[in-house]
Length: 329
Image 1 (tube, rainbow, N blue to C red):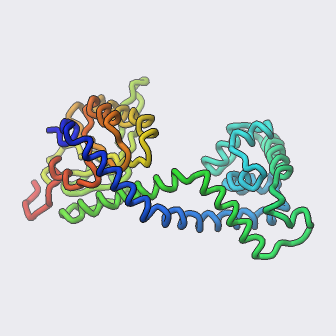
Image 2 (cartoon, rainbow, N blue to C red):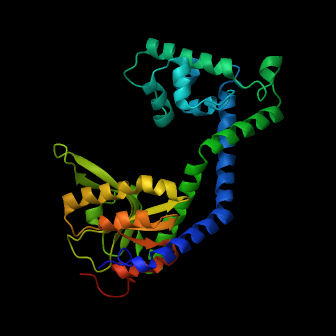
């Protein structure tokens, strides 16, 4: 039975409450999340400065041994360089740069001579564009004091955090949403199973749940298996052998624009799941923030229901009831 997707008369009221709920969290908790990330980022920048002898030694060998420092080095230039801009200026191998930044490694099939030649071009651009106002010791030819280094690290950390402000806030919000779902389930007698312990969606015991579990589905492309990541997987207390768990996707948004760009993601997931496990698959969204009637209408048309974070108790309406002393057969 639908819980919220068919209650169109309540959508406007729920949207307003959800926006207020998100804004209250943002004002009271987002700055703390950003500051904590900034502290950690400052430490990472300081490590990069140490590895490069405070930018006096930007060499291919250093990048080969420490691929993950490249995003930080892009922020040490004037102006700071976007990834594609660095690739263009250095005429560098795009796959190499992306592997270094996303996977913290260099392409295994790229031979050493070619790798060093590519990295030499990158190092040359970074050295030419280094922001000498921040790293003033480079022109002066002096060894920087610890205060100089810390000040420079703080500036670069600000640049890095500024470039990734949205993901920082989104990750903090997602962690909070998962915590809220977990607390709700815990208070009703459900047991958390760490996904790292080899948990499988079709082997979960009744009244258990886990976070971030992959559900294997069959792709239309030659029957290949494709994993669909799900934020929360719950096996209701009255489940029987062979039952599918209850699947929850946590979604938050700080504006209306991005949600309508992302709304097809859930539809694609539910389509893959239904094609593999049938139409009785139980999949809902857990929403907080700026989700307008256009987004809700699209998801409802795809047969997807949702629960608002400001009304988390609606989970009970989907059968996630309190786990009591009843014997599980």
